[in-house]
Image 1: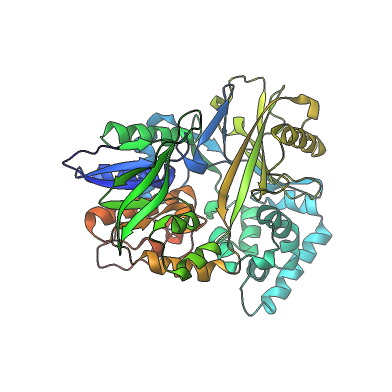
Image 2: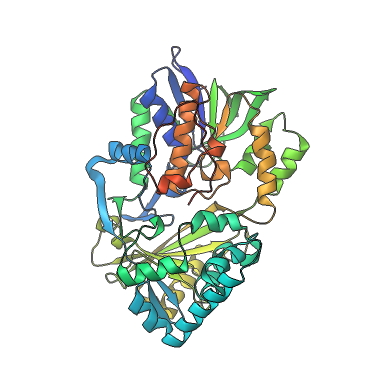
Length: 494
């Protein structure tokens, strides 16, 4: 049984990723009256922002830049990391039609690569769609075409987006586009490419990064929470959330030994609860179950899964980029990371290279069920197909499968999420935060901000409505602490 300090109010935190650990850290920072009890089902903190390792090589589950205009998040990063932050210049490109395009676009590089004839067609297409746009923007495809034109959508949006999500752009909701590509248009792209100007956060030229990868951040937060009297319990899976009417009373925990053996289910009580597990799983964990319409809504939510094959090469970097977006239909890989370009300390041997081949898939599909050896062979062959390195250059590999990496914005998710949100808001002492906890494609800083608000709600008594946080604003102006009477509007996050 987990023991808590008698003088402190226990706050149960479900999940040890960025959102869960931020909630615990924020609670301790602003109050000594609460004890966070964090339960993480795996043996590593950080969630999708963790840093895995093999034979001294460290690698991300996808790259994680540390950039934000949310002052509270920026402050926490520096409080925790101190001198362990490094500044990394951004270099990324798009591989399309056997050519590399600088990203952000540079005028002469783009013109040379795509050719003046096609460039003219792109501009004419843009003019056409500006004059006669889609009257309604229900889908990702409609949203992008209205702002960039049909030709540019065909070249630089359709193939990669459909590789990532596995469904046509017309089946992805427009609010995902508004969230991920906001504050950008063809005119701005051309202006930025010609002048070098850039005020779009997704196109920043440099960023900060923990010298040993993003997991270093969350390992430090874990230690700080523990040192201040909180608990971070690993291999502790929340299998039930118990409630009495509108009040959550406890959670059921199943612990796993290092050799994979489960313990008896343990009941842990709390005064407040903060969740960051996937919202579909959360709804199914409630006892008693929510109303049937809420359960049905949860069943409509879907996720895109992800796996990374990290290849160690027998020579140094085959390319200088942090990452390359692969639009080519010849290969299954969607994005390729060069981990030395993030930090040299990610590699124990500077005469080698560590290359992350990222694949977007569904749990149980052909990619997901490949053996590790088959995935190593596939990644090596695709690296050679792209002309970046030879298959024979691969001397080691590590494979990580990540379920529920991305919440899917399909045609039915929004209505379903509204039903779930409405019911969860009726619970008196329970909040849900983070990417999967809100089923919102948040960046790391946005997930952290939602968790900070949850902690403040516990201490300051319902000061913030997490579901209605104006996250878009955080990339365009300095976040200021709002007075209790202020209204915080909901805008999709980046």
